[in-house]
Structures are given as C-alpha cells and as structure tokens.
Length: 359
Image (cartoon, rainbow, N blue to C red; front, side, top):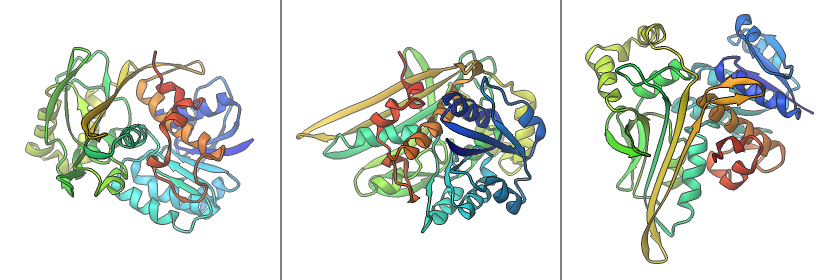
C-alpha cells in the first residue's frame, strides 16, 4: 500500500483524504499546522493526522520522509515551500494551484528530479485542460479554443450571485493577477475581470470574464498552432461589475487581507453548489470548418458518508485520478508532467475521474 501525504486539512484536503482512504489503496497521512482542522476531518475510513509547522521546511521534510507522493492542498502562498520539501525527500508531487508564479517554481524543481512533479491537478487548470486538449487533437488546424469554468451556488441570494465554495485567497488571486491568452496567434497578457461575455446554458443566463491561471500550460502547448486561446470564469450576471467596483474603485485590489475579511464575514459558505465546465473548439477538419464542444454540470453529493460540495468533488477527484494514473504507470514518473499529457478517456475511466461522468 502506497504511503501518501496530503498537506492541508481544509475543505479540499479533507475531501481528498476521504476519497483516497475510502479506496483502501493508499495509506493516507494528512498534515496541517492547525490541530482544529485535523480534528474536523471526516470520513468512514481512518487517516493518520500529523500537526506540523508548514513554515518550518526541515520539520515538513521530516514529516514527508518515506512518502511515495505528496498532494498539496494548501493555500497557493505555500506551494513552493511544500514542493521544495517533496523534492528534498524524493517524493512525487501533485498540487491544485492556479497561481502562475508558483507553477514556474514547481517546474524548475522538476528539472532533474527522480520523481514526477504534476502541478495544477484540480478543476481549472486540471480537468478543463485535459478536456480542451482532447478536443483540440481532433482538428487538422485550430482556430479558437475557449475554456470556461464556474463554481456557483445553486440558489444565489445576494447581488454578487455568489457564495464561498473554496479558497477565498484563491478567488481573490485569480481576480487580481494578470491572465495569459493567445490572441491572433500571439501570446499576450490580459487583464482580469475584462472581456465580459454573456451566454446561456440550459436556459440559465451566465457571464464569463478573464481570470488568472485557468489555462495552466496550454498557452505554451498550443502557441503556434491556434489563433485564439482563452480562459474565463463563469458567474451569474452582474458579478464582474461589482467586483470591479470593489477592486478598482474602492482600492481593495491593494488591500487583499481586508477584502478576504469582508468576503468571509459577509458571504456565506454553501455546500449546495454546481460546477459548470464548458469548452468550445473550432478549426478545420477534412477541409471543413468544424466546431466541437464539451458541456458538463457536476452538483453537490455525498462521498464516503460525507456531504460534499461540487467544487470539493471535482477538485479532489481530479488530483486523486491523476495520482491513480501515476501510480499505475500511466504517466511519466520523472520530471515535469503537464495536464495535457493525461488522456481524457483514461481520466474518465478512472475510479475517481468517474465523478465527472454525469447521467
């Protein structure tokens, strides 16, 4: 049985622990600096719980010694520290970060590593990257690749049309940091919350706008092969206008701790959410202009006896499926591994990836 460490006992880390322990294929240890977080872990199957100061890299490395793989479910600010600790003990490393700068550091750590480094194994980047690359491979010539993801409350009740479903720090970061895109064949930086578009799925109106990090390494992969490539976050109409007022007009872009406090004080958490994945690719095939799309809704449910939000299910099942594929020999076992190297069919056939298969 493979020994697996999960760093971070929050909403996502706890869900990963529940999934892996329920599979009875992994000996799971969860590490966190907060004993209360460890005590709140739920699930029908036991996991090991270790309190460790994540800021102490020597202590963290000691706690990770002997692990086959380290799954980072901590906040994006700790990504590089946890990745360095995994590198020092020779363990495989997987994370969920959407932070572009952190991923660059992880890629550097992967150079010459005896183990695999697979960042961005969640929903976006992660699953949406796998889907987009699968669709893109079906074309002789690519024109446009549009990737859209949203984690939304099923029953919105405030002007933002939003409830907290995952990391507040992560949401703020993706609303504030520059975005990557390919525009007319050239790699460009675009501004978050811009290029607003409106659309409908199943009769429900949505908006989508630029946010940072969702493309993963797709710009590098498709540069020179696609005319336009972009990623946008899906929200209910009106959300972007309010966020631009908060961040730009009220200056909270430069006061992120205050914005986080406001969010976590005023916006309730919900477990009744829905994750929307929408990818559209256009291009030439057999001399004809063609379009293919992928649309999916994943809703909240119960895993291993634990009520789970849709964002917990999709994010945790993503990294668990990639871990399974790695341990089964289906992915490179050394160096940097991109999400685009994961086959969609293999992912969806995996016992964890099946959570994305809806009736």
